[in-house]
Image (cartoon, rainbow, N blue to C red):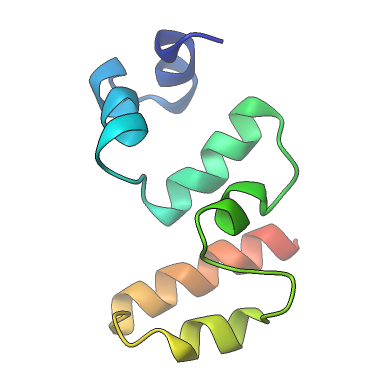
Length: 85
């Protein structure tokens, strides 16, 4: 699949896909969308990006990250709930 194909599936620009592959990580909710577009198992990219491991529960991962403010915590929990569903 080309960058343009992925961009079309995700409704983002090709330049955004390029940024994700070179300098900037996609947002958490976009990681889930990328997994779906590529047919990857749920949670694959989140584990690969270091957001979660098999040894850490969602609540532990969120609670342990001092960089997450209230809105970011809520968004991360929503992503994980979607993954579990």
